[in-house]
Length: 237
Image 1 (tube, rainbow, N blue to C red):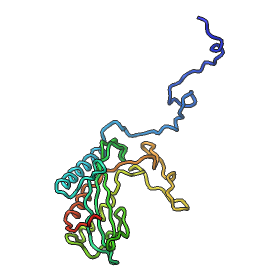
Image 2: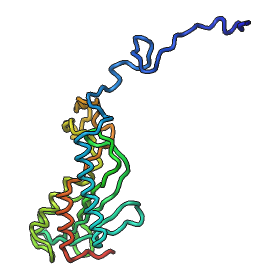
Image 3: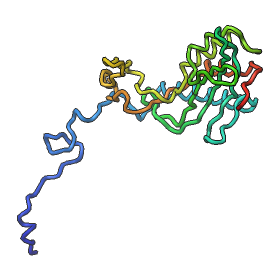
Image 4: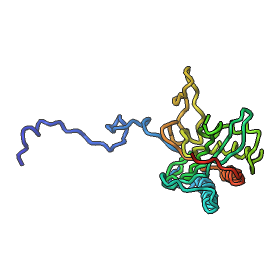
């Protein structure tokens, strides 16, 4: 066989499997690949706990749908919300309202690095009105505890339940895993993501993904009960 001249002059390069250490010609150094001491393919107790909690939230959501407390959002698939329920008035006369929204999200990775088939995301919202005008609105904060004059069907237990469910707000958006702490603040008050060491088990870097946590079904149940017992709904304007 005659080999063309332009091929005869080419240098032959030994090929190595991708991922081999750089010292042997591979494209990745060992330090560039996250090591794990968790068998991510095996069933875990954390996965079982996640699925059990999420299944209970699923039951609560469907019960609330059947009772009419949760209404389907026609513009967002797999999303149901309560009406805007009047909780009462703050000392400065603002009328406080609260609502809960539940959205079924597809498969995700949990804060314990389990692959989960889906999760119910909780969104807890509050608004503060004076007359017809909204003075303040957004996710439910500790401000709800300032209510001193309760609406019909609402009492201090109801307010405490709403205050407690704040911790479940956007439970599918966690920048860190269960094995990491919180970032420190820089001189401008911004979170320094690099201040959090990688996960000691998987090498996961803080803030590189959104990790899911199953909502606490007890807090969800109490908050739904609190809104369900109230009898005054804010008019839709």
